[in-house]
Length: 462
Image (cartoon, helix red, strand yellow):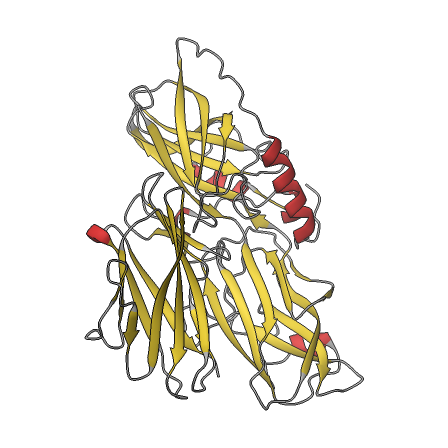
């Protein structure tokens, strides 16, 4: 398999996803042979994006699905690969889920099904029957540039295929990470014109399905998969990417996973280039994939996470070359790094017709009196309340109460109904800073009946 640069052009990805998905048509499933069984599956998108859309968004579009079946010999011992079945009757009308059918071989023994979505041609060529599940996961590697759309995978475990009924649920996890670099400079700080972004020491190869031990389910066995450790294939080479020009003050693209590395000149990082304080020449600055709380150490990049770098201050002129910036510790540039699991929107679904969607995973405000930020909440007319962790005694926001204000000594929150149509309700949540202090808060959104709890961070940027 040829190696290419793995950084995928967003415009090409959008054209592929929207063009293929919007034209997809259902196909009739063949009649199963006596030793076969036709099974209905539903895959759930990771950190769902837009609910109710007729065509899937770029990061959730499903274009091709295959199931790798693993069984046990006599129902005992290690799970071994048996065969691959391509999915049929693919149907996706929204970003929440996609339905498909697959014809599998009947079995009364336990079976594990690895679902792979948007896989490149030839991905399964090296897999032979009798191979262990661990070995198969390690085999399915290649160049990200060869993928069709955003690659995803998921796992379903069944006690028996022969007795499988109803719709089998498969939560998915994306095989790559999303990177965004943007500028939001503090008032009174020197100017900085972002001109291009470069990624250093990112892997040229990626592992389609993560190692079993590197993924945790947030809510038990059937919860949302979350990457905890990077799955990096053997033989992957850390490549230096060509600088990508930035048209506006924001840049977004995708990259493969990378393991943590405490040595700056060996760890994956981002280098930004731009003109400092009106200078005619470009300066270069390094930004690391790490957070202050240590949950994401230097160089670590995990699949299905959105790493959002917000540059808030540039202290002085940077390095003369991008290579110098990449080989030295990050200095002179201050950025806030938020690892987010998912896309622009954060959606939560429990049942096909019940959902809550947030326009962002957090709210960010300047540390000045009167600073504001807004967040939009869309629900299936589902009542909910919002409380403050900073001040649990503050009167909550309640969709059933006309007085929609929540006030602490630091912040004021208001909830405004916007529109109701076709069983869907939209709200606007506004946060206003009452002080200039660098305080933090967390809002807890709770759907009626304890069906859902969402924790919303309120961050003071400057």
